[in-house]
Image (cartoon, rainbow, N blue to C red; front, side, top):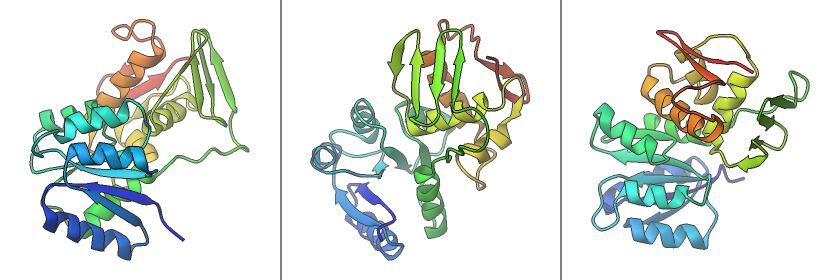
Length: 228
């Protein structure tokens, strides 16, 4: 049984070949593309669970391709790049990536990032409410649907899992590490910039005034708190 279908996008044929071999051995179905333009074309033709997307490519780069894909799809996206500054990470995440891997990377690291990107926080019908309604916000955990002021809002899977975890722990400050491990997995904990980007995106989508948030409140030096 396939572990999922992955599209590798990189202009370096050797990197594509190595990643394809690594992922196929682990049970994933794999396709590849040499450019951002080819990636967009292949993505429109087929259904993928994850895209491994190189940031630096001739023509349409990874950031532009990521934005184009994210504008119409919630597919998991992991950005690959030789750059390692926080600014580059924030740029990639802000474009819609779920995660970020710096080249050169080891096989265990690549596989861990793939598993984290494909990870979804399961809905447990036996614990907690299935729907939360609070002022102008409604979150249905069973259908993964969010409505704000009567309008359905599209969240990426990671954005929804982040909101879900916070909403199911109302009025409790959730530390950065706990939130990262709950949503991305046990290998995470130090990537505070991930939370900063995703929380900002969530606020833009659900808060009436993102600069003065009422639902997702920052707890300085600790983490975040959901206030229904």
